[in-house]
Length: 190
Ligand SMILES: Cc1cc2nc3c(=O)[nH]c(=O)nc-3n(C[C@H](O)[C@H](O)[C@H](O)COP(=O)(O)O)c2cc1C
Image 1 (cartoon, protein in one colour):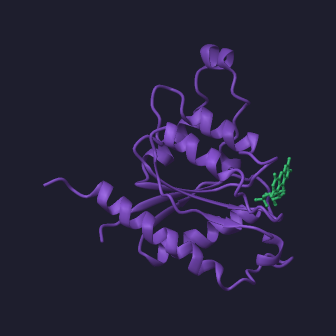
Image 2 (cartoon, rainbow, N blue to C red):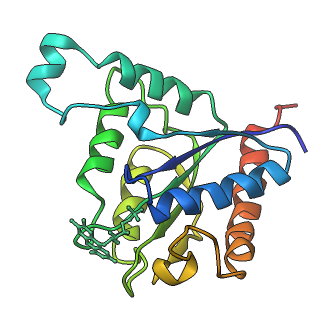
């Protein structure tokens, strides 16, 4: 299989975030499959709330261009997002919206795999259709299967160690689809 470069983006900024931990599980599996990974910490790309007047006067912020470039250089993207009030967290949607500006959308035509973890019983399942829709509308090829993790506080212990041994297997199954589709999408044309 050709070397693939995958950007992994947790949608939470919180240091102890379950979605960051879930993103690291995916990162380890992708590396096991000889993928080059780029773990994107959104704290490295702080963005103001999107404001059309700001964009018109100041342009797309430099840190957003850097983030756009990281996404653009990947063959595929893995997202791991919390669910806030049944929807996409505003902070993460703001990042999605900013990165779609500037006359180029790095998520267009990109294979995207969606994951989410929450400490409640919903496991981000109420937010997932919205996230799928947003990436689809941006022209991404969204892998239909998702990884959703309810009761994340039982999946990792208080020290942050993974205690649910079934999790990597569940993530690996969807990653297999991601790699399969990405390989087909990026294959050299004859
Ligand atoms: C504003 C807000 C709204 C939330 N709404 C939901 C929700 O609708 N469903 C849910 O399962 N958890 C909800 N939660 C709890 C989050 O799932 C929990 O904080 C989770 O740990 C956040 O993800 P993280 O650990 O990656 O930061 C909410 C948390 C916040 C701060």
